[in-house]
Each structure stands twice: as C-alpha cells, then as structure tokens.
Length: 164
Length: 260
Image (cartoon, rainbow over all chains, first blue to last red; front, side, top):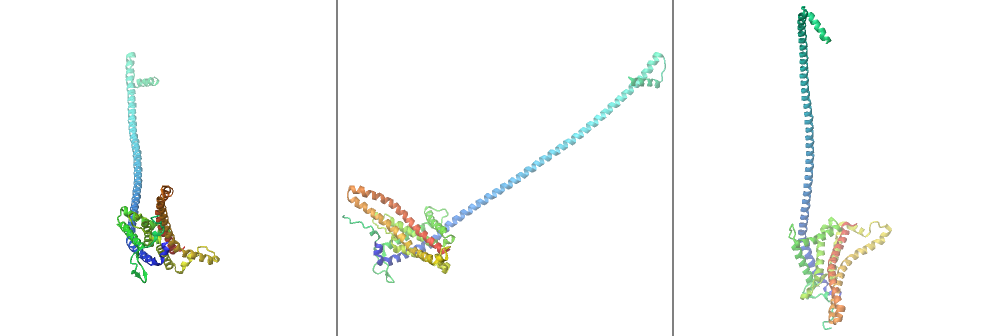
C-alpha cells in the first residue's frame, strides 16, 4: 500500500500541501465567498417572509374592513327597517285620525240631516194639523152650517190624529 | 501476459512532480506531488464553483441555486446538530464538506480516457488524518475555551451513579480520544476500498477479455456490468463520506458547544 510505504518520504509534503490548499479554500471560499452566498439567501428569505407578513396583514385588514362593512350594513338595514316600521305606524295613525275625523264629520252631517228631517216632519205634521183644522171648520160650516171655533176644531183634530 | 499484471494499489502512488530535491521547509521536503496537484485542482475548482454562485442575484440562476443548495444543506446540518450558535462554524464545515466532496468526485473522474491520471487525495490517511486532527483540535479549543475544565464533565454522562464514575470516565475518555482516528480512517478506508474494487474489477475485465471468448463472457462481461453499478455506488459513497465527515464534526462540535 503506497499510503504506508511512502509515508516516511511524503508525509511532510502531503500535510504541507493539504494545509496550503485547504487553507486557501477556507480563507477564499469559507470566509470570502460564503458570506456573500448566505447573506443573499438570508436577504431573500427575509424578503419572502416580509412579503408573506405584508400579505397576511393585508388579508387581515381586508377581513376587518369586510367585517366593519357588514356591521355598518346591518346597522343601516336595521335603521331602514325601523324607519319603515315607524312610517307604517305613522301612516296607520294618520289614516286612523283622518278616518275618525271623516267619521265625525259624517256623523255630524247625519245628525244634522236627521235633525232636519225631524224638523221637517214636525213642520209637516204641524201643517197637516192646521190644514186639518181649517178643513174641519170648513166641513162643519158647510155641512152643519155651524161655525166652530178654531180651538174646538183644533182639539178635535188633535184627538183624531192621536187616535188615528 | 504482455500488458503486465494490474496493480490495484498503484493508483495511490505519490509521484513527485517537481521540487523533490530543494523544496524544504525546516528540513522537511515539501515536493509538489501529484497528490498536491489534485488538492490544488480541487481548491481551484471549488473556488470557481462557489465564486460562480456568489453573484448575489435575488432571483438565482441555476449555478447560484446549486451553490445555495450546498450552503443551505451545510447550514441545516449545523442548525439541526448545534442550533443557532452553530452558524459561526459554517465557513469551516462548508469548506471541509466541499473540499472532501470535490476531492472525492474529482478522483472518480474517468480522465484516464484522455491520458490523465486522476488522484484521490482523500484516499491517503496523511490527508484525511490532518483534516480529522484539525476538526478534533477545533472541538478541543472550543470546548476548553467555552467551558474550561468543566469540559471534562463530557465524559460523565447525565445520571451516572457516583460509584460508576471511575469506570465510566476512562471509557468515555477513550471513546472521545478515538474520534480523530475513526474520523480520518473512515474516509480514507472508504475511498481506498472503492478505488481498489474498481481497479480489481477492471483488471478482471482486461484479463478476461485477453483470455478468450469463453472467459470474456464468463468473467469479463459480468465484471463490467458490476463495475457500472459500483461506479454509481462510488459516486454515492463520495457524497456520503463527505457528509459523514461534516456531520460527525458537527456532532463533536455540539458536544463542545453545548456540553450536554
């Protein structure tokens, strides 16, 4: 095995050149180039993490916005419902009031009309009585040639009308 | 046979390319060998790969995605084993993981087709051992710097009855001290075994083909089919061993970072 046969003559050279080459690699690659690579990776990772965080924040904001919008919409809908209900109640009340007014007016007119009718009937009855009294006086004077006083005739007519 | 017999371990031979005679540091010869060449190639390829992914585009291209995939993988490994405080070990663990992975994969490239001989540096325990000792040293330094002598409580698991401590302590200590050896040897053995197996099987294919039609169909073809499967397996092993090395380093670092 050359590794053992040549050990005595080559170990110094092997160790020396390994230390030279590995040292070169360590200082140039490990300490020189590697930080550039890792810093680039770290920068990219951080950028991605930041972007994700921003996206997450934007999503949360959008959710909050939507929630707020929903709350507002619900509130406005409730307000509108209340307004409609109030308007309904108001309209019903107004209708009721105007109906009551109209009913009162109608009643009033009706009562007045009834009163007028009553008065007319009363007047008509009075007229009939006086006509009947005159007719009775006339009939009596013509048939019996008697002159009956108005009071007498009137009493007779009243009695007849009351009976009739 | 005319071609000479296939030597399955010849591929691990270290051949000095230049600097054999006068490249000395403190008396030690540091010749530039084929092993050093492939470690240098690994380092360059790795630097090019990661540099191509460090373009800092917010929307990454394919190359950047690949690099970020690796960094993310190692980052997750540290996070799941050590926690948030594991981030500071990312440069080391990433370098370690990628260096071993690229070294393993480059050693598997079929470059022999164009006349080059790929060399797997991680199939030498002189290399894996240094990496293991490095990881272990970091564990020790972090452990003692963070917890001081309290770090020794690592060797007394929670709920150990007092009379058992003199027995448990040496056992835990030994299992702790074995870590760098198991860490280094595991990678070295896995890489070497795979390459030896491929070499032996390819030797079967070559010898079987040369030995006539009968042997070709009896031994050559099945060996070749097996090689295809083993090649896929070796690609898997190359990744898994790099992962295991990095994972175990993370686990050991977790001991040092969080005690228990």
